[in-house]
Amino acid sequence: MNPRLSALKPTWIAAVTLIAAALAWSPSAHSDDKPLRTVEVADPFLEMHTGPGKGYPITNVVERGESVQIVRRKTDWFKVRTDRGREGWVNIVQLELTLDEFGERTAIEQIGRDEFLQTRWETGIMTGDFAGSDALAVYGGYSISRNLSLEIWGSQLVGNFSNGWLGTVNVVHETFPEWRVSPYFTIGAGVVSTSPKSTLVAQEDRTDQVALVGGGFRAYVTRRFVLRAEYKSYVVLTSRDENEEVEEWKVGFGFFF
Image (cartoon, rainbow, N blue to C red):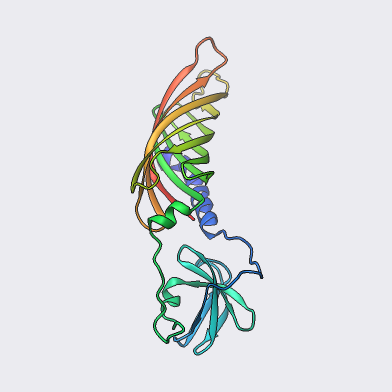
């Protein structure tokens, strides 16, 4: 097996696990949620999951003719409550088959750009090049305001002569968040660690602080996905007389929720 692919495999598993956990996450149920509307089940049954995702188990089934109250929305999943007080999450596909108060099919507004702008959390995975090494990165971000967000990045670096990891905290400024393809700028700081592969001459592992500036763009694709491409310039603050300058580019995708 290619040694680079072998080294990347654990990181791919960790990245997929992180994204799946982020997508599956939801706040704990609150009994004081006020209903947004009430609908009637028209299909033979309505499946209620314990969380907003197909991976959550089905614990309750609402039969035809019964009513449920819609109390919260999370992308394509809706938290509902039955007349008996049971709560669960229902997918938009099943909810659109229910009947409204006029006996018509329930109309569900699709999430669009406006809802995208109101989201707070984003996570994703990107790949690219870091100073000639293959880089695989995962990130998580939180929107502080309409234009500013805080992101935490973790990357695995695999090169011909050394392997390593990079961790940074970045502040991102998005000047035109309402644009479908929106440019952004970022600054940040963190730590990079490298481990030489050479066995002929003993070399110590290095851990150095880094500072960065960069830019890129985010392209809104669907109600939950964005494409990202970015370039960053790093200054590695070494213990030697001269600091090092490193360039990085990455492309990938993110999920917002």
